[in-house]
Image 1 (cartoon, rainbow, N blue to C red):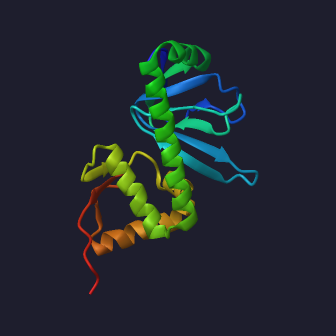
Image 2 (image 1 turned 60 degrees about the horizontal axis):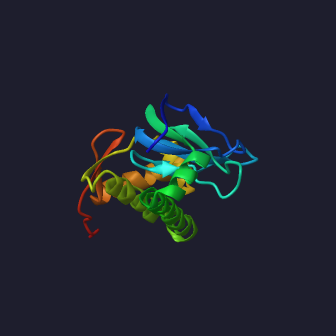
Length: 191
């Protein structure tokens, strides 16, 4: 992907809501969150972006979400106009952008169903399954984001996320190998 590589420290802003959406971003290393701050100060995290993810596609001229580094990260930043012009000349690039955009849209659709129709347990399990899939179906998942980030992503309180993680651990569905490492194990049925 053409563009400039930039480094961001933990919690550093890549772009703010309502700023001009002049660039598209690709995560090279680390994790980025896109989020929206509500009028009452609450935060909704829309997505976590891992290495290889492309984000920043906007249907209008300004960003509808903010983007922040969850961990120290390296991101390639590409001028949107230049990228679109290049995609018009290069069918392979155009196809890759289409795939990246539809992948992001698919994740957002799944997230909408998760928030609208699933229990706290189902939300946390879906989050862990997604993290495992994005880490190449790893049995041990590194969770770089805080429990507050997870709660803000899943539309739950931090207390509910912590309680649900404890319940999942008690049933054998997961085991905690540290505050940010989770082993996904077979689910034992309660007697």
